[in-house]
Length: 274
Image (cartoon, rainbow, N blue to C red):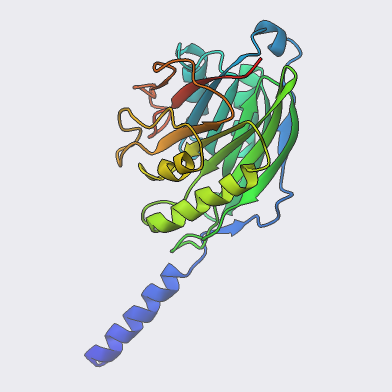
């Protein structure tokens, strides 16, 4: 029988090996993989108002319940007819299905290919306005255990004659990263957004207070207050800069995800200068 110290040594090495084992393959290139589609031709004519943007952010929980998510997005008054939808925990097939059902254009960049499911995991931007440019921002700090990365999917959309830069992101979890690391992840997105006059950033921030970083950089935080969007707190948020919020009631949380996710969707309305 092995001595007690040796047995604990073997156990310790095993735990280290498990902790250091990658759970997915990181897509480290900022250029791809990339999936995209155009909106239906009638989409912009159906909604002629180009001075307001209704933005929705929704983590659909590994895209497991796409049909339920489509039903929610098409029937819930606060979500129906959204101009921009920011989705997290998506794969390419689910993103395409939702975009087609809503008649929206989209761009999707996966962050990781899961070894367990052999499905991609990443963020998408869906929009009824033309997407004229897009990209992926690889965020600092891989996860503590799976060594997987986080990213933001970026899209520049043309709303009438104006351009708006939009980001959908999913910051590291509480178990995988310290709060200071999530702040640095958000700062990486803010740095990329610095060259654009009108910006929307939304997603699963995995942190109730990380929005203070955006607020200190001049962003409005319309979703700061409200109910928990997850069992762990109010984690899902939208930040805007270079746009205005028309009134205090121009943001909210849908209180029933109808079985489509373990997160609740949040929304905000922003106005563009004329």
